[in-house]
Amino acid sequence: MKKFLRNNGLSLVFLVLFVLAMAGQSYTGLKQYNSELQETGRQQVKLLEYFSSGHFFESTFENWESEFLQMGLFVVLSIFLYQKGSSESKDPDKDEDVNREPNPLRKNVPWPVKKGGLILYVYTYSLSITFFLFFVLSFLLHWYGSMTDYNEEQAFKGSQTQSAWQYLGNSKLWFESFQNWQSEFLSILGIVIFSIFLRQKGSPQSKPIDAPNSETGD
Image (cartoon, rainbow, N blue to C red; front, side, top):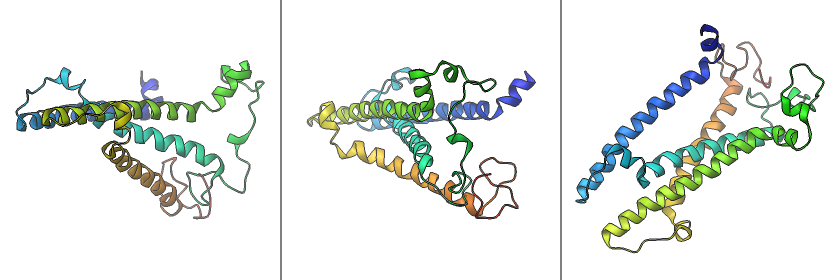
């Protein structure tokens, strides 16, 4: 167990933080949603009912959507774009190990490398494919949640509701997306630029403390 915790500490801590934050969001989101329902004279909901509401879907998946988008773009753009001196970039003056062709004769290679063919092709790009698939799924669920929440409000006010395709052109949906996308792009810009000049001892996201600013990577 000790070895398992040591080898998986980073993912386990972030999983616990995710669960705690999700619980906090669910609790406070339910209170906020019920407060809005009470103000307009509508019936309040229980927690399980809240999980199927447009309010929950919108608030959850508009954030997931931006996270997966930024990571997918970062993975792909860092293949052929560089930032000299950043620990988040490949060195433009070197041939990096990540560029080498897979060798099925190497020791302990993953099974898709041994299999070859289409399986190896998909595995070769599986990281970006996964991030973009999760982005698309999150966007669709955000779209559904935002539309449902919007139509509930419209129906209560006696105004016209919108179909899914009509809502795709609604500024509310895109405002929710862009306000999250811009913050994620800013955070990536921050780590790319700050890692040129700033250091964090012991972190793989930083260069060694005594490394020159012009040195790329760790």
